[in-house]
Length: 224
Image: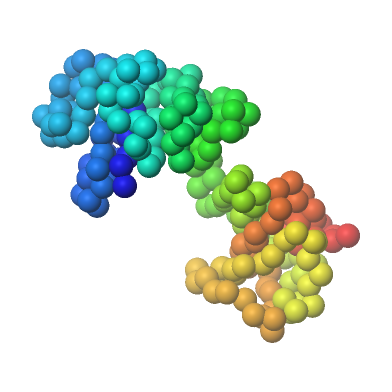
């Protein structure tokens, strides 16, 4: 696989190192001269100096044959532009963009740039996962497949506690895929009896979080 990485900061540099170790062909583009010279000492010919927002710089790096373009600069506008140009002008199949400010995530989505990675969002989800009071944790978005994966904590008064999976009437467009109990995860079968304190993973159609949360009653609410 040929991977083109824009931005030789800590993220871009480490990504390049790991991908090269896995046997992939990698080129990193960096527009800061000092940073370029530092990274070039290790990556040598795998890093190029230039501004990737200029087409000739992307073309020199071989964007037209790239299987994957990853934009991880510290500027959201640059990351957005680079991914959009790669997809629309050079027909790159897959792009990944770093979002430095989570408030800008909507603009990436409006332009059809996906997946996007926000360190802030990832840390918030980890916090939610470790703090039981949140009840529902949004784990993963699959926008192309129009699916989401969420985690729900069953509260003491959950209306599904003590019921078999086979007896659940889950909202249409949702599926229970895993149960985490006392630190161990397993795939439930129809005879599995849910217990308060269980953390359940479900895959569902977008926009169904509230309906599923009400059904499982993670905060002790009644199901509808």
